Amino acid sequence: MRNDYEMVTLRDYVENLDNVKCTSVAEYKIEKEVEKYLLNQRRNETNAKIVEALLA
Image (cartoon, rainbow, N blue to C red; front, side):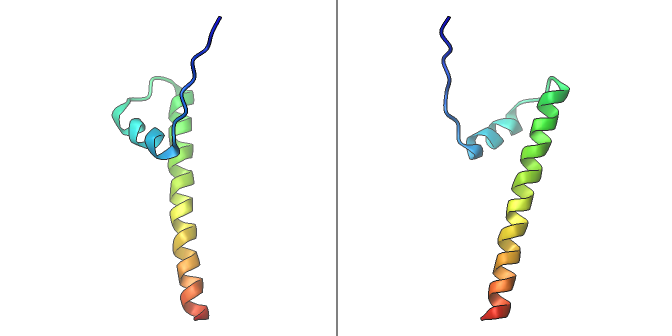
């Protein structure tokens, strides 16, 4: 048995999520976790810019 795997970047994965409707609870949870991760990344970048501005 051969498994063919494809490497996907996080950005491509998120863009694909917009085009696909969740068919299971597990997929829905994964989608929400990815969204939460990306939101936290944006917050961290914003906080870093604020701290940098305060220290400058």
